[in-house]
Image 1 (cartoon, rainbow, N blue to C red):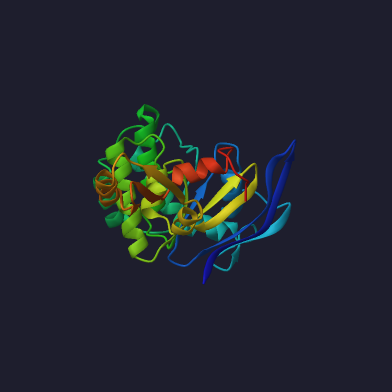
Image 2 (tube, one colour):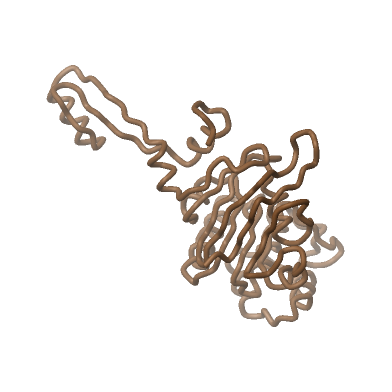
Length: 273
């Protein structure tokens, strides 16, 4: 079942800026990676999903709700981390989290405590005195603490150190096992490779590819023939690198990283899909 459905979504800001005829679906229990450089249209797409922007044309629906007409319900129930988090700076982290809980009308005490411990966050600090990483942690806790079934995450590990990035990836893996539906916009290719079932690559406001990570890798496989100075060395090379040996030549097939595949769609050679 498609939990998130975007059909021909368009918003034209002029001068080639905006999003154009964006269509994709995210299935129930799927983690979908949304990749693209700054300005490609990821955040504009996500803002339509959260009901912050009204579509010029096309539609987007989440959990059978129209993302514009039912935006109040979506904003209360969906777990959302914006690309640029804005807080009430004079609040402490704890005050902001209480505010978020009241807005949703939910009791989130136990889950909130678990998340604060996981990310080693003291919420009693004034937000205006927090580092970028601490503010990002507050945003993560606010997005996950009501245990939402749908999560929309726009660059969620921005500002986190490698240890906390890894803890976030572990959290995503746990949520995936629990059947959550997740849309993840990220520049962290390892994060996407470790968690996502499929990815959509957006280029200049248009989708360049939508497929599983494995399918994209197979599509961009590269085969190399290596010539060694003796059959014996060729056989050793073939054993080490999983190649096929013929005399003193070895044929090796290599799968490219997701980062290399991504760069292919941004001028790294070959035709864009």
